[in-house]
Length: 422
Image 1: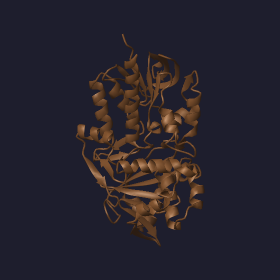
Image 2: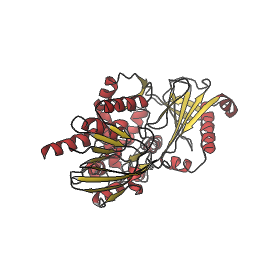
Image 3: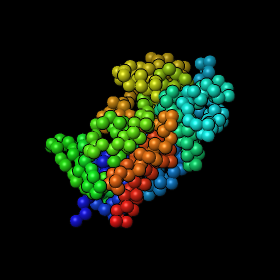
């Protein structure tokens, strides 16, 4: 009897891979957490308003994710493509946001080789405001320090985003957890087994045989199969928390070449709105702690966002410090007294993904001279280990749900094709 394929990780890549493989093979998903979804983590308020501690937006019109959304009959709403800046203490709309960004990014020439984005900014001919916007965008959206982010990686990501209208952003009205639940239900209908609270510690492999050792609340367990899909986050792979025996050699160099992006995201729910427009889009304030914030039409909610170096500094601070800085930022942006904002505050949420042992990053980015790494990371090992996850997306949609989804489906199809050919 054929052994079950093992999917290591129950995030969106693992769920997508398991569902695809289950069409032809039995599958078991091993997940270290007590829930599925990975870096999709939705909390519902008593009013059933979704608060997204991890992934929040659908970026563009990726066919793979929209097929699932339609199949699950999930309602979506549009995030306004409006961008505001704070100048001389006043909010004003920047209607040329994307053109201003393109003023810088369109000058990236891959034929001239890869270079750090910080070095590129120093040499590029553009207005100071455009350079500042591009820096904040790379550090915020890509979660990449400009000293490390490669120009080719940024260009590849932007080009891929254009192909799916990535500037158009949507929410799932019930939260991303709705998509996770749908995939889980489909998987269970297809006979997929789930082992939660199962922390994989060691993956021993040779061609055609994989033995996985894991810890559970009941003690150590072992699983054996002929093929496994590894969807562990890049941060976990880099940390060595999961041992591969024998070592992965070249694959380890590829893993080390990619960057682990850090994000600090704070969600603040209020009793009532104190900002001018309910669903205003995004404010780019240049604040030293939380340079980006946005509103959520599903409730009186504001989200503060910091990436790269700013986020790295915040991860070392207490929750109280983080919340205080976020509230101070909102006070400055909207010119409302801090005490008034504190009086209206109803709930605060945040999650430190970098210090989470089962993620160890928010999402990956492409450093200098690593633009081929996502594709190389996705390559199978000995027709036995298959890799998937947002860091493996060869379409350069790193950090996105549809990037993880696509890579999970690709790994599953490759596994089935190889196994069917034998």
